[in-house]
Length: 549
Ligand SMILES: Nc1ncnc2c1ncn2[C@@H]1O[C@H](COP(=O)(O)OP(=O)(O)OP(=O)(O)O)[C@@H](O)[C@H]1O
Ligand SMILES: [Mg+2]
Image 1 (cartoon, rainbow, N blue to C red):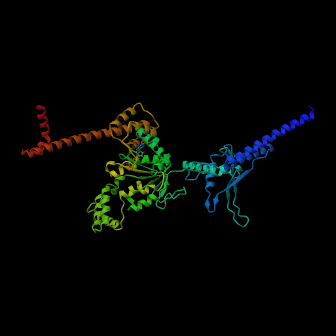
Image 2: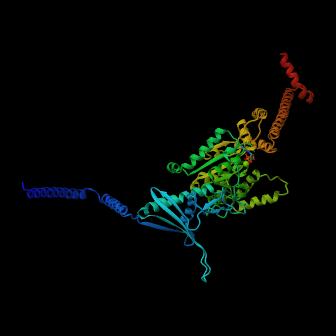
Image 3: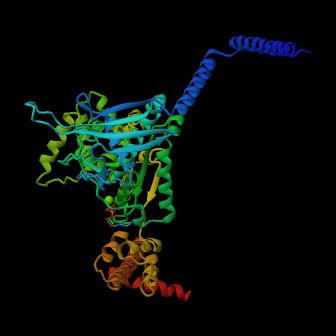
């Protein structure tokens, strides 16, 4: 064939192939147009054009277009929370090779913090997005006739196309992270009613006008507490579970709070455990002194003014006369509902019975007048009022609360306080055990063992009731390990001597009682005899009779 004809037929073939491909593409396109939904189409369209633009930028050596967000220190008259959060968060992102840094520590901070200096830049990365923070500072200027205060802001620069990720994900991440860092650095606070100070720097209404606070610088931690190791672990696990179970509490329809009852003899570490819990969770502590409160509404007001993530402590709950008997509460409330004018007298008599006022005391009349006045003003603080706040409707006001009661006498408490579900965990703080002594010795003397004293002390500790507070006090008496341990041994020997004395007195008392019973029964049978002879001699005679038998 002529080469010209050959070329012509090839071109015709190519053209017809192109035409058929083009027709198929158009057909597919119209088909796709009908089948694929609009959002999917627009997504692919955007992705393709972005990819294409990226390729072109790469090819031409152009940088993707950037965006800068300005984070001012103030929004109007209020502080800009993003600025504050960025300031805290960026401390953790400062380049360790930086040549200039600011160093700060306020009285309320626990540790020294580093921060950026003027015009310093910090780079960060979040989900594949590169970010650059720059700290800008314009110093105060009073030269142009008008005073210009110092101005500070951050500039956050990133790829423009990543704006949504930055606004929706990165900035909330910075806010949350900053809060975490602040919580770690924050000193735990102790709120009480009578405290004249208000050191609350959290910006919240930690006191609401009712509470004053100071830093809780209690050094107690779980490691330093001498208590049963299994119980200690159980308490820590319980706290961890409580803190991470926000959604669970919501799901089961329970207020996100937990109650602990700490009971045991004085000096066994109940208050220390409260401090250890607060330090472990970084929760503030509200020390609720019930003797200062006169009515349920006052109690409610006080409790409503407490912050979330806090521990409310009522120490020595058994000493609050109002909280002994809820049935009596009900009686009082029922009596109050009637119009009987003697009601107030009944209430006063009840309170009088429960108080320590003694007749003929100098303060007798004054105290009685006060009690009358209280009831005349309808002021009542009852156990029902407290329970209402613990797990009634009021309990849902506030999240992540822990309520702790401490007592030396659990048996004296109203069963309503002890029923399951009210105080979720009852923790017994008992006398010192050998394992507890190990903790105290390590804590106070930095020793794990002593070949002479440890076996003696541990053996005696098992036999006698001795509180960790007593041992701790003796361990602190000398810096010399041997002297300190000898002190503990002496203390235990003293206990032993006292115990033996007590046992003797008890056995004598038993003998006396026995003798008296015998005399009584003898008298009843009509036998006459010398009283002392009966008391002292009769048991022995009785013993002889018994042996003769
Ligand atoms: N279990 C313990 N572990 C370590 N130290 C303890 C323990 N118990 C008591 N202590 C020491 O004794 C001191 C007093 O203890 P704490 O006030 O905690 O006892 P408590 O049980 O609250 O007494 P109370 O019933 O009288 O209020 C603490 O400061 C601490 O040094
Ligand atoms: Mg205590």
